[in-house]
Image 1: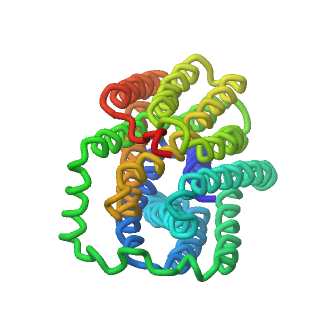
Image 2: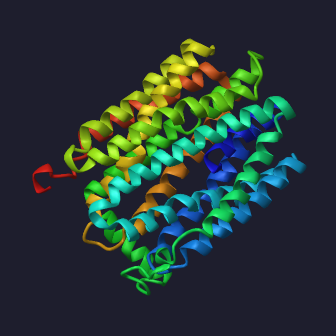
Image 3: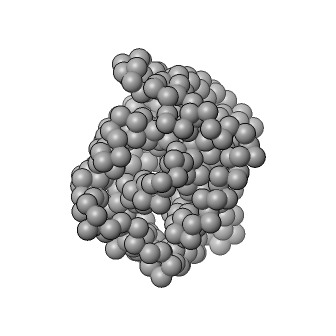
Length: 379
């Protein structure tokens, strides 16, 4: 439900005749909420065990926030509601990662995360298809109500979690102060591999974060068809592609080196932007989203694998995951802000060219500056 919210909100606000720069600010508000929630959440998950309660609160907040967006499509209510919803949605990933780490153990962690991502993408694809049907039948506001309904269903499902997921973490009670947390972050950042990886992840999201929202906005702006169909189609194609990719990468991660596959995933992003510039029609959109599925399916699983390699002896895996996800969200936030201003001033094509050039730089940075983190011979 949550991964689709920004795309459906973009389509809804476009049909409310919001200008590109205001849409970019509205989407970025959700990103800002996600940044704060992910860093604080990663820190909290290293010391607090109430994981089911945290998931339940995320569901409640999401349901309430989308109701505000649907009823009050005004600038400041939308900003506040998306800020809160973005924070709630952003906590799902680190909470489920902490649960997976706790229940699967070190050896099964990456395979479990690959499986989690497969189910996540299958859920995104299914909900995207459902929202497309709702959008055609009831109008562009219907997907927002649909997201709220899925949040309510998710709240019921949280009750089915085993009490095992609330068992205290190994390092419970340590580094609870802000000073000690910051010291732990700076200690971790002294690891050169982590610095390069986090910089790469930040810059990748700066290059990639605005691509789908801009595609949706351009499609609606050019009146190429039913705008309610485009978000769902983009979501379904990319997410269906990610399902087998994430599962395969998770299963094979113990036996494959990380770096070559990650470089390939990064390199696909500027290829996508080139295709976007060449065509706004359906054949190109399908190919673009298949490439997105390949790229994101690899990156989202190897993100956890590489951080696990680096943090194996630190006991700060959740903090690192929260920090990494927060930086990625900062990148997406900056991407939406900058692309909104670029589009307003120079048009869609120039914006996609700029995002593609940024993608090339990111792939080069990782290829030249990041060493391999996984020794296959050790397995």
